Length: 301
Image: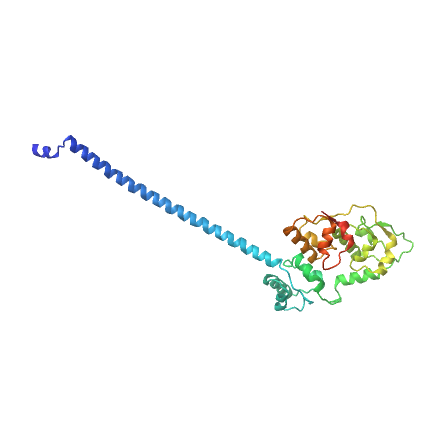
């Protein structure tokens, strides 16, 4: 027993050595545990980073896809004279419409839809105002494509309308303030024409003179000569459009600006800077076609 105790007893130096060895072993064990924990954390962080990068890449891809789609939607078209009721898919594609736009037109026709007027094409949600502005002058439709077409009947009634009550006084109206209900009291003006006059006034920004009535669709010289003595142009503030700040849609809506002219304006603003005055604007948009001189009264800089 004493021998066994003697064998287990350590000198001071041996005890120090044993404690040092145990401390080293403990340090190695803790270092290994800590390293594994950091490795797991690092792997998790890398996994999260990969996920974030993947999400970012997907977002960029979606943004690029939308930009491509938007570019296609506003792409310049190459129209030729056409009847939208008889055009094939390939012919629509030759004009420059996208597959999405063509599918929308084909679906509309497959359900029995027909184009009775140029504006019927503009009503399709895939045809933007910019697209229609390019296509409108190339659309060829019979004057009346169905006998019971409501608008055609209304136009005929408007044209044939006469003042059947000579004793009834005819009002004098201010063309910039009168509403459609009052306009129908004038000779040769029916409800459909009255609505057109008010709508044109809104697009124009106000009438500067009586003769601008001749620019309203359906108003010919014979009807104008009858009605012009009952109208006047009072003092009214003309609503001007800012050529440097208005967007493409707002500019192309104006009756005195067409698609190509608006395109020149937008390109000028984006590439060369603001348009300073009427002389610069007139020179810019009048290079290939004449500019309506009245436009000067409707623009601001």
